[in-house]
Image (cartoon, rainbow, N blue to C red; front, side):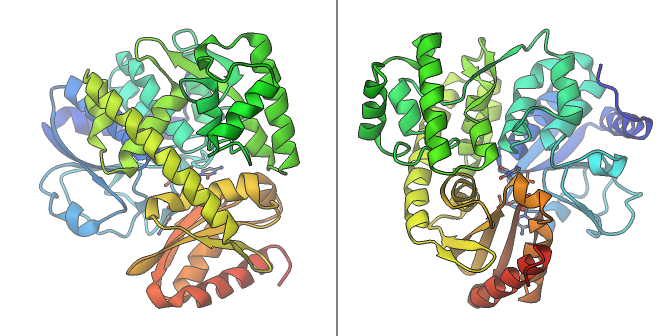
Length: 438
Ligand code: C5P
Ligand code: C5P
């Protein structure tokens, strides 16, 4: 049973009533895996109700664009919960899980789990909220589960097991959607899967096909074996060797935990939950946010296109990770590096943090354009020692005329073009204070 507290349950009912009594909605969502998944759930739910809607994807909360649509009820998904927007409309529903900032939100139907005592970093993301809303509207919408899961995986809320609200949903639907612990690499042949593996990242194998084939030959496994045809004993050999590899490269704990994880296989879709999440992420980051919804509504060409985009994204990311690792710089309380593409900032910071640099300080990736985009990633161990990257990046960005925020373990920001050095200095100092190491 999915049992939420009374306040949260009645908020979902309020949102459901608003949707019931209106005919047309303006939906805005974020372009990452969670945003795209939650948009799919919302769009499909509205379509099943025969409601009209116009869905747009944004990189961030672009208030000017949103305000232009205020003659319709608005659904804002995965774009943050800033309550100082002064947005007026016949109804506003917030489907989000980020930190809440700003004054009281009496005029909005705010479904952010943080408002009701739940943890929006570990136990519910925007796809969770969208799925709960969809189930409140009609319990037969449970078949949107794959999209819910894709969002949860995209936001890494599956690492170390499903918690809280996510855990309740998985438990409730496990009869329909069972899962098994399995090797978590994605590809057609096993050598391709290791060569293209980013999470986990195998130093010396990821990004190097020859090395990946050689590694498998040493284990007396044919590198061309289809992943689906691997025998259990072969899988065990691979898991043992890859675990050793992760130990040698000094990967963080959550790095190992992704090697074997809960794998959901959706036979009718021909994909696992992890694959769907990757496909959605790749579609979003390549500006093709419509593909997941189109595929879900039956367009098989959209699946092939997402497959191509996902391979392209993985190759680009692998190259960027290598370059950024080689050119990284170290300060007392952080590592920093540059990336050549804004959508590779988060993934590069994350892989360097979990798999490549010693995990005793966070990694910051910067992308220079008219302004500078910043992405920071930490580990659970650092967070347990008092690190709050959201506060550190937020304060340092504000100090140089920018802005930023996010989660204690993963945060980002934007700063003016010429203020990078000062930003890094301030961030270094702020982190030092958090670590008691000023
Ligand atoms: O905007 P949002 O909050 O959904 O983004 C969270 C980001 O933080 C995602 O890119 C997700 O992959 C990342 N994350 C992470 N490590 C975690 C949790 C989230 O890198 N443990
Ligand atoms: O962009 P990136 O994936 O690094 O974002 C990590 C987290 O920081 C996300 O939760 C994102 O919503 C948040 N963020 C933010 N303000 C920004 C940039 C990112 O709150 N200016």
